[in-house]
Structure formats: structure tokens, C-alpha cells
Amino acid sequence: MRLAPLLLRWYDRTKRDLPWRRAPSPYKTLVSELMLQQTTVAAVVPYFERFVARFPSLASLAAASEEEVTALWSGLGYYARARNLRRAAQAAVGAHGGELPRSEAALGELPGLGPYTAAAVAAIAFGARTFALDGNGARVMARLGGVSDSIDDPATRLRLRAAGTREVPRGRPGDFTQAVMELGATLCTPRNPRCEACPVRAACAARAAGAVGEIPRRTKRVARPLVRVACACVTDGARVLLVKRGRGLLAGTWSLPEEVVVPSGASGAAREAARRVAAAAGVEVAMVERRGAVRHVFTHRDVTAEVFRIEVARAGRSRADRRWVAPQGMAELGVSSFTRKTVAVGLAAK
Image (tube, rainbow, N blue to C red; front, side):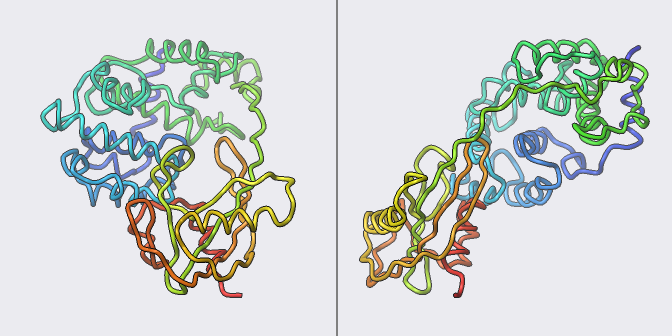
């Protein structure tokens, strides 16, 4: 059974009205594909609309500073995506006359674009006969093929992509890729899939075998390490001191000064760490008070931040890697949701 005719008819009837599908362009496709990686559609929509309103073209994005781009990405997470998007725009402007290259191979040569993004943009924006396999697509193809190997295995993903590529029609290859993604997002979901509404249920090997609940199989993830940090909410009463992260987790964003402390360490260790990072930021510490704790689960670590409000006798000057910011001014900087939580705890009224 050929999947494309059934999927495309279903897609034409039921596809969601999403902003990047209205008056589509290669640029909108690129922005949406990067934003959607490891992020839900519902979360992405308002960010996408703000982003393309502020940066309506590759040229405007390429001309923006990293800080401007990160500020609009603030709260969406996985900030390397924002930096990669800006780098790709700069490369397109510098080497391709301000346009995205049309081939999958050339798109893959842009900095920050991996194989999935290159295939998705090539298919959706330029009609290349290729297939982009995301998490939803991997689940759909595994169930259709009755593939019981872990979809986290690179060899399995290559196999699933090859299976999808064989189904790509000569016409509307981009819509076919989107239809597979749409099916995974709306019907062929990880739990409680709606098989009775699936347009290709008759071709599904997992359904025929009664194995929909067991497919796809995932590799068991290693438990996230528990990390304890001390955050210094340094304030002069009106402003808070933020520092720019140079590398590692949340690189390029602004956050409270912090230091990792031993999870099972002495109760005073976090307080002293907070005092230490505040002093290292160049302020005279007048008072240190523990205000509470914030837990935030990142992709690869489970962080508990002990937040200390530190009032200063004298505020230092702002510089490239540290700024005194009024709470309402944080919207103009790239600030993660983790940092927003810690600042809120540090500044909350007692």
C-alpha cells in the first residue's frame, strides 16, 4: 500500500493552522524547524510570531546581535538553536546572496544545521524529494514497519529514514514529510494513539500485531545527575546583578552569579558559595539571606538552586559580562526560565 495518497488526503483535510504554514517561505521554514526541535508546537507559536515580526528576513537576522536574538528566544530553552539560526543566516547572506541554498547538501553545510534540519528545509521549502525524520516521524515509521529496535539507535533511525524516503511522492514531498510529522503529533502519539482515526491504519504492522503499545522502543536513559548550586541574587534595592554565561549550560544567556556546591555538603557551604561569587562579581557584600530553593530539570541534569538575597553596600559598574538590571528590564536580555525563577525567589517580598 502506498502511504502518500492516503496521508496527503488526510493532511489536506485536517492539518493544523500554524503561522509558518501561512504565506510560507524558506526563511519561515528554517525558523520554525529550529524552534520546534525538542519543543512543543503550542510553546513555539508565540515565539515564532514575535521572532519573525522582529526579524522578517535572513538579512535582518544576520544583522542582529547575538544578544538581540537570544532575548527574543528567552524562555524557549536550548539556546544553542538561537545562535545556530543566526550563524546560518549570516552564512546565507555572506555566501548565498541573502537566500537559503536550495539543495539538502548545501543546506547541510550552513553552520549549525544538522541533517534533519537540512532535509526538512529542502523538502518543505524547495520541494526536494527527501524525507526528514523527527521524533514524531520515527514513531510513525517504526509502528508502520513493526520495527522493534530502539529508535534511539542511529542505525535504526537510518533504517526508518530510508523507509520514509521510499514513500516520498514525486509531487508534494514537503507536504508528505509534514503529513508524517502531523500524524505523529496528533494521532500516532506516544501514549493512547488514536488508531481508529489513522488514515494508514491498514498498513500498520504494529497495529496488526497488537504491538502499538510496545513500539517504538526507546533506549533506557541514564538518570540525570543531581546538581546543587548556590545563586547570589545581588541587589542594590532597585536592580539585580546578572552575569553572562560564557559556555556550558545556557551559554550566552544572562543569569545570577552561581557556584556548584556539593549536594550533601554542610549547610553553610551554599551560603559561603553565594557570598564568594558575589564578591567575585566585584561588589561589597552587606547582607546575605537565604530566600528559598528552586528546582529545575534540564535535559541532562536535575538542578536545585539555593537562592540567597545579597544586599550590597556599594554596587559596582556594569561591564560586558555583567549588568545591573531592573527586573522589568530583563525582557531585553536573553534570560532563561531558570534564571527568571531564581530572580523571582531572590526578590520576593518576605
